[in-house]
Image 1 (cartoon, rainbow, N blue to C red):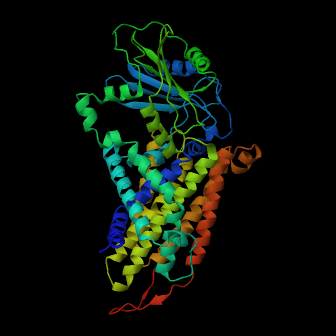
Image 2: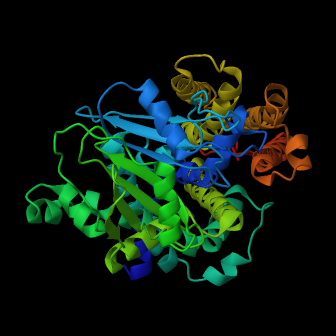
Image 3: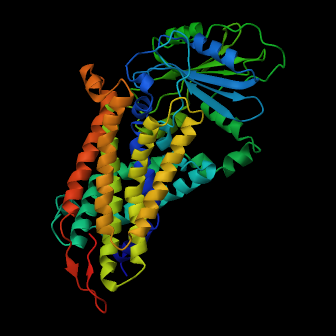
Length: 508
């Protein structure tokens, strides 16, 4: 057995076994490229394009009025072009529980907007499947298997450049799917290789913590503090004096950074005399924000530390920025979106090739593989659309609104899986109906948005708000594509003979 033959088996099974999980990871990461635009779309209060006039001191005043518990820390982020509102988070001392709110930019004083899962839901689904550290390890393992599948796939394809220009959609099922698998794999190969590698690399300290645990006697936070060069001051357990204005410290930080933008502002031990304020620099034009931080005494405003990331940490931030597309603006995020969709198509094509090779053998277990395909490949996008419908239909006054949105997503996905199991012997009809349902969901959302919010598509286009309009435009495009594909699958399927069994319908 030569190298190519051995790699063929590794590619087949190394790519097949995690393929459904990889689809979830890649799809969620693709949507998360526009997480902040989704955050705006899912909050009607932000549809008018109003930029907040509130200040950091206003946000801190709201926190002091509405949160009575002693805090370990709180942090906030000011308005940006993609998020024109203030965000605030805090941790109650001794609990390790976190809370966060976003403020309506239309008022003179901070007022929280109704909570929603927003685009952050897809970001968390992408990197830990909403399962904490266990989910993060599962995603890391899937990323490693993806690297194996990509490298082995490159080795077994002798005609990789010829495959790039070959697509025969009207050929027999296996040939057409293989062409599609090759095409999307070759087009996105550099992107998928880099994203798979960086996705694993940025969590390497969590995947292999032994060195830090031994070197720092289990105090991992000390390790991260030294790597980042952060400043820490022990608590004095004395009452804090009147705090310095946060807006003044932000202005001073801009002056010291020659007018650079400010990102996160955090206050540690705000109720203690040892309280410090960290002001972090933000630079969206670079791959990987440098994370330079100025630390001030919260009472006197004295500059205590000037943190500049080390060369090693800057390299890490560069990898993280490259993975998360936090540079280059909308054009780069659009490129990531297209390449992510190519990755999803590559996985679908590869599984269809595997099925097409085996469907003539009369293997009864294949119907369950097809049901799983339908549950994941169609069920996840449909559940995501259902989440957006839930966002619009759940009343803004509902107390646990974000949790309800999550249950809409889970419930819709479970229903899609049940539907796939019940229709497992007629997957062509199932796919046609799923595509029609996707078209209804996608095309109906812009209409529902116009009925339930002020930022409907025509209003967004009229004022040149392309960031908000892009969500509705993408939904319309997705709906039209679903309609076109459903029309193609409405054609009568071809019948093939299966040895030893009655003729059955080929499931494309």
